[in-house]
Length: 302
Image (cartoon, rainbow, N blue to C red; front, side, top):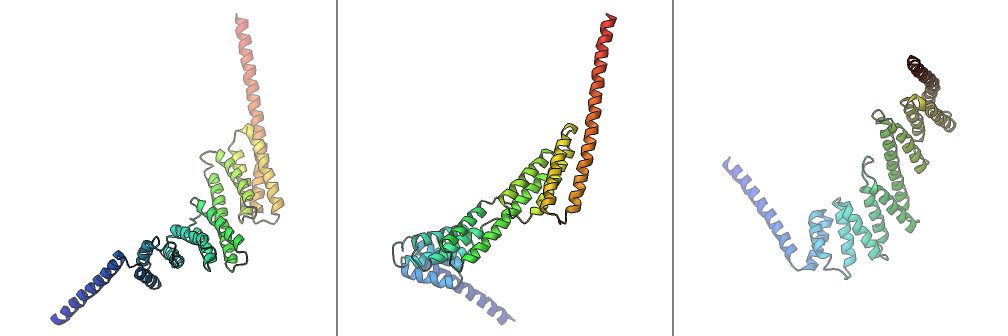
């Protein structure tokens, strides 16, 4: 038992010594001035997928190899090392820098594509700010414009489609949020209508078009319903106009029944609003008459 335990401890100690020796060799190389050996070791580590160590060596070599014949390959590996480590922000910069610096390189097209692809990978989910999404679309479109016959152009176009889908989702969600917040402030319903119509203008082929058109009717209806009686008729009529646009655009919509119910509610709302306005007018006239009578009685008593 003792011998087995001793062998285990010895094996563990030897493993630590071996690992320590490897680390020492790497650190010794990193601190040395042998750039050729560093370069070869960096390539070896990259091919072994030890990207963290390869990056350390490549970062120290970029400046030293500037202007040399080996610089092109070094920068190519350097950009891909960053990409493999998922540092897409720095990688896209390095890929673009490579394409700009070596436009005649056999790897220029690939690096231009990878720069755009890194932008694509850095595009956040739809609920966040979409600045990078717009930049990714621009970068991918630039690649297509520069290399229209490239095998990668079709994939770039597909990525643009994915990014546009994300922007459409963002636009729809933002508009829907106004509707959801309408209960706190009725002007949010009007803001929802504006945001939805703007989204339809910005994205004519948006996949949420039918649902958005219904939501416009619904938002305008809620805006009218929660308005003062004097403003309701006008606002209900706007909702009916949006209903007519909806039915014209989507005669066989799955939302036809719901849209019809909203229209009927608008018609009923107009009738109710007219009744309330009329009653209010009568009360005002009655109040005026009573006020005049009060003044007359006061003068008579004098």
